[in-house]
Image (cartoon, rainbow, N blue to C red; front, side, top):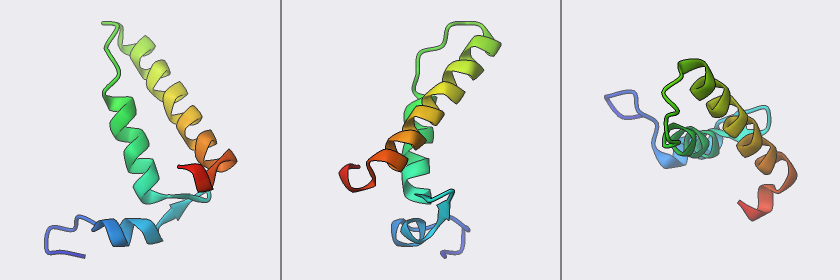
Length: 66
């Protein structure tokens, strides 16, 4: 780990949460964060959560294709 406590890509590949590696979760978060805002915080939070669920399911079902 570097002095700023930011994980390198190699370190991210070694992390897993629920079987999904940290680097893939970071990719999902980045993509979910780029969703267009509806202007409604609750709707945006639900859309973010739904996107994250689908992204993680994609890893669970197709880890070799991602």
